[in-house]
Length: 128
Image (cartoon, rainbow, N blue to C red; front, side, top):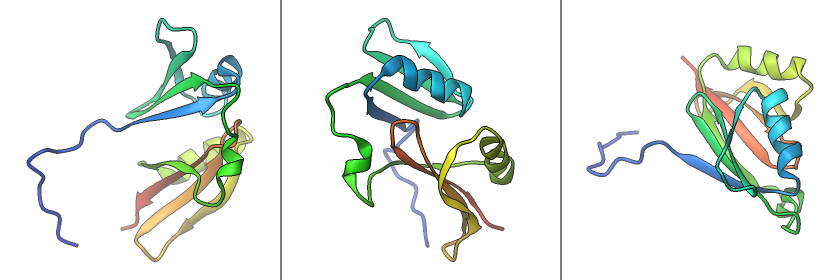
């Protein structure tokens, strides 16, 4: 596939999710996935950060549960380095995997997880 440089590149992608209990979710991202939790000065929001991946989580106790979105309810695909090490780290921390680590025919080694609140995320690394 030929990639043409964009005159208006997209930089620093960020994800925004609704969670039913902000404190509980923030603690899970910190303790299980290894994110740093940042206070935004608004009690209904926090900023979750691990390396270049940033997620803004908002307290929405009455929002539709992510599990009700069906098969295509993923909110992120994050490309990573050292995917085997990340998979092993999260396996040791009891993360719920929805797809085991494997090489795919489209040139990615990837796995998927389900967060505490039911959000689904994919992680991948290009295969050599």
